[in-house]
Length: 120
Image 1 (cartoon, rainbow, N blue to C red):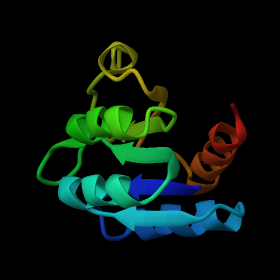
Image 2: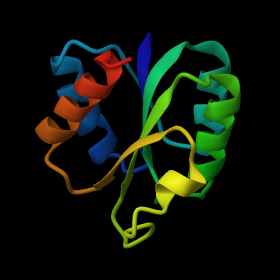
Image 3: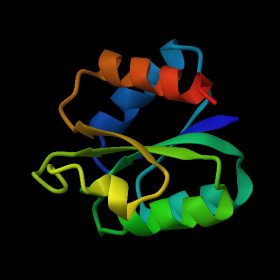
Image 4: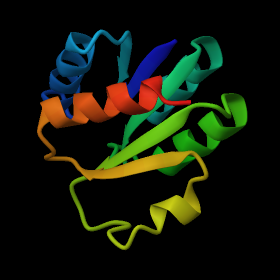
């Protein structure tokens, strides 16, 4: 099973990917809603790291599609804004397992990915 990172920032996405791969995970990195949906149709995904600030929008649509297509996949949401700072993301996305600031240290994000990917 793979980890899917959905991040449109051309520096942040590859940085996260390197750190998560260093934890021994197989990672797919995509930058758009369309690419994420296409990946979810063809790749068995255990965990998704999904930026709510995705360029072009659609992050919640990706989470909804993942819940439908791969109901066991969990989502770690990240954001650089105050969206859902009250924790309400857990009411909006049934597959949410964590909510982090986008500037979380990549090594810390990778540790969380490894934890949630191995859980359950």
